[in-house]
Length: 501
Image (cartoon, rainbow, N blue to C red; front, side, top):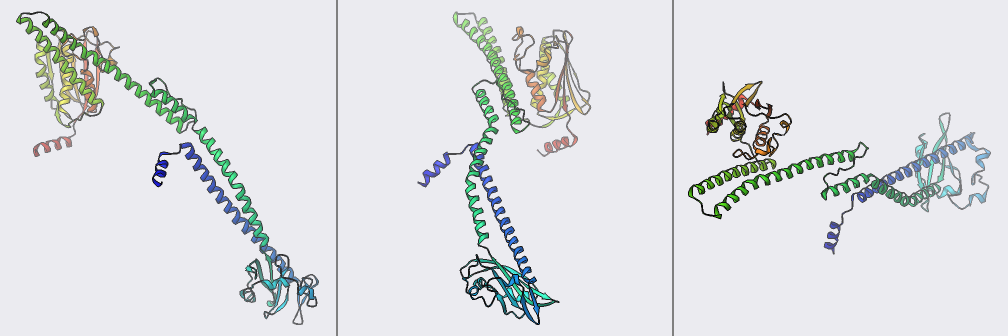
């Protein structure tokens, strides 16, 4: 049974509204309890203080009616009329002791002997200090009980004449009425409490429901967005509060998601198109080769064409894999000292056969050592892509210049060509994936996948650098890459690590 209860409790989780309602109700209950205790305590203190004031006044009135004549205490008319103060009134002396209705007064002589006492005073259990303390001219007050357990507030003081104590006056009043009043107040508070808590619970639920209306609207809109309508945006309330900030954050997140999905769809579409083209070409050529026998030279030409298409397909797959890993954040850069002046010499030497094939003159300028900290393989890929792009779009007999130098504390790598140039309307898009200025000639150049500049832009960003393009149609293009220079302490650390190895 305990296991079942545990499972049921674990499955049932109250909603936020109910949790807030319960929390607010608990807070209201705690506040009501604190207020009730505060009211009860203050009312009790106020009533007791009022009774003490009344006792002080009564004791003073009795003191004003007592005089000493020839060493004997005498009472004036107003006080002598108190029940039991007339020794000859036998009825008053034998009156039943009821502290709730009778008068509680006792007058003692300076020696502590009873001078006058009301009948009801005999029912009190009077402590000795209530007599001894006033004899030292120190008033005493406190709560005493009767033989039946009733509580009485008692005040005792000395009466002096010329600094001599001539009498001790004790007055009391029953606390039954005070207790009755406090009990009635407590009962009324207990009767009011359920209604207050019920109203607080209803009000709390209404307030929480009203507060969560914008959240409900956000949830419904988010549900529609989840169902595929990414063009929807959550409503932004004009409240300047947390809900508004949440709505704005959600809209920003949805905008980013929409852009990401758009890029992903376009990327998948372009990738499918690019992969389909070489595959279709290979199938077409193989179908023709299998359709009828051909001479060996034709078979060799078909195989060479298939090999070229397969090589282009391999480059495309490699580039797609690199960009996919980049998007997922799985690509790690190996940080090491890289001499850019040496790097561009090696890249130029590797690209020289391609430039010679098109009768393009390749110039390399590296006046002095320029060192950066980065991934050498990625930097070679970046430079090779830029150089390949320049050679591809430069006509025969043109010039391509590759240079590197230090500039304002940065390494400045420049690839300049005398090619066809880029129109200004295309410049903002040239680093987008599969973007081509002339789609009609998309596959005229070998291994041109439309991803080279996208990879260049990623490599530059990964090395905390920037890349800019300056181009004019018919006059050529200049790609400029700025990378941070390696600090001397980094170079020293790199050299030390190399020496240790």
